[in-house]
Image (cartoon, rainbow over all chains, first blue to last red; front, side):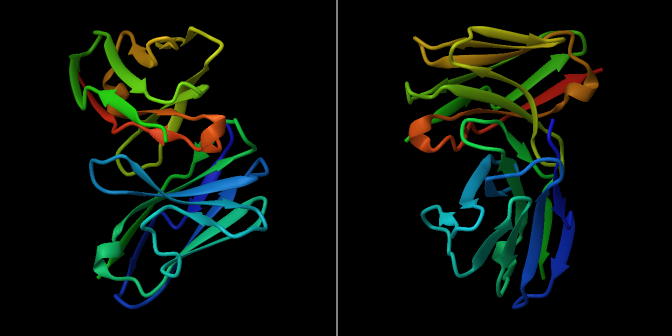
Length: 115
Length: 113
């Protein structure tokens, strides 16, 4: 299947700093990318949907000013957690689709720890 | 919107046994049903999927069945192996939901050697 690369896999940052997570589709063009957050032993919680060249659509309850999403090209989307706090510590996962009604491929996830 | 229920939440089997995970969905317009396997500390990996125009699909030891009338679909793993141990998620997507997959809560499968 298609490959989605997410970087970094782990990051530890100090409270109040910002962290950027990258999501790349390596062998296909992703018209749509998704960002999820996953708490321990729970399902994936959709945070936002981003389409190349347009603003991301955030799910209800997700602070767009805190979780900045940029989908600048058909192969790259970034999630920036601004002014991170310990409660932002979580597993963040991106996925990408080549188009509507196609399978979604997931990155390997990023474990964010805010200290 | 779509709602996907998944059962059981935990499934423990002996190596060589079969495992079955069941999901139900609410949106009759849903037409795509993928299954993902997630190992600890990793992202979900697509293992098999089925579309609404098909009743069953098989790939080696893994099979998925779909009953559109009852709005439920199941994952069947035969001859389970310890490396099958992981969390499995079902999902459903529809045109009305912009094809964004709605996930079940996950099933933790433990295969004992």
